Length: 114
Image (cartoon, rainbow, N blue to C red):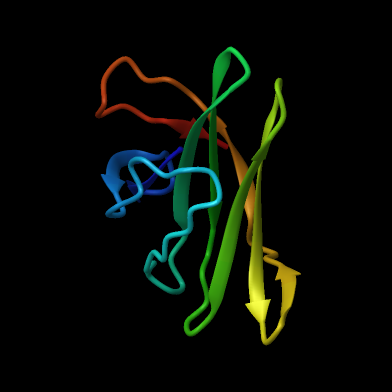
């Protein structure tokens, strides 16, 4: 699995590596620091069945909060979930939204819409 962020979350341009998230094994976890109060767009890429899966999501992290993103898949589909940690409980992050992945002609193009 690969996880990337974008410098401009409005259109998913300026892809950037979070550090040590380029090749992650199933079940592996990484901590990533995001700017609070600013929308962050995150791209997940993994292989499923005989193909690949690309998902982009975004949310606005709150200061001092911890979040957990999960990527699940079956042989035909993949899914991203995002939960905010509130003590020992996990709650849905209200600013979480799925984006529409687009494959640009060049790396400088937009990777999402919506």
